[in-house]
Amino acid sequence: MHQTIIDTLKRNQLSITDSRKKILELFLHAKGALAHFDIEHQSGAEFDRVTIYRTLQTFVEKGIIHTIPTADNSIRYALCKDDCANGHHHDDHVHFMCDDCGTTYCLDHVTVPQVSLPNGFTVTQTDVIISGKCMKCA
Amino acid sequence: MHQTIIDTLKRNQLSITDSRKKILELFLHAKGALAHFDIEHQSGAEFDRVTIYRTLQTFVEKGIIHTIPTADNSIRYALCKDDCANGHHHDDHVHFMCDDCGTTYCLDHVTVPQVSLPNGFTVTQTDVIISGKCMKCA
DNA sequence: AATACAATGCAACATTGTTGCAAAATATTG
DNA sequence: CAATATTTTGCAACAATGTTGCATTGTATT
Image 1: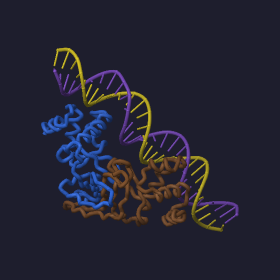
Image 2: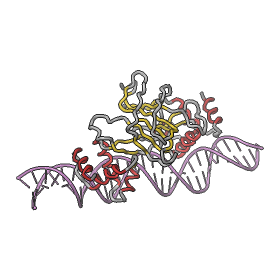
Image 3: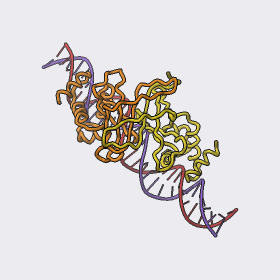
């Protein structure tokens, strides 16, 4: 597990630092998606707020994590399945956000339906955000 | 048109005030969705920032407008087709956000595809956010 | 027109996100 | 392994966004 973390960083040509290791570890252990807030608290005041912002930004650029649009517009991040290849837009996702507990799930195995658009529109990415009650809160 | 505005406010048991009339008017004339920022500027420093926040909040509660999850996580609002009945969850939407110009379209006539979820999950609302290039920027 | 009620503006504050720069940590080279 | 080059970090300062309490003003009701 720890080796996976270092591998991932190396594979993406990122230097191995405490904050990157810790934040990546949080994602690997997390069940759902994480907001900046979660990370700041779960890492226990260990790192500066700015460092967390920059680390998340770096991870997004490298395609290690991706952002999720949510109904309450808090930015959430989740691990990409395999590192999304740089430059390519990553797989389209279905995300589920529980109205009760706020947990955000990546439903990678659910297929994103094809949506037909009006003429003149081109699609880069399709996000499907489903809200409702999750397994635990139903 | 002006009558529509007053009707809408009355129908929702809201008192008729300058800010509400103006903000509702902005939505009726707007092609796409509006962010708080847009409203603050388009209404020309006429109202306090706080008033705009509270008005938007009220409109959302009454089901006159709804929020749109966006890829860049800026809160955007758009008119509901017909006032969404209070308490009932409103129609599911397909939204399109242009990567170039940032305009957000409500594609009300496009049907939201049915997504099958894992057992134990119940759906309240499905949002589909498509990003790409719009008609004008293609 | 007088009263009851609701919305507004203001001030103060909390949260979230950004930028520049010196200090510290990591990587690279001989 | 030590010395140097490169990156990353933490701090400070700032900007933008959102929230709350309260006196004042505007709207609705009788």
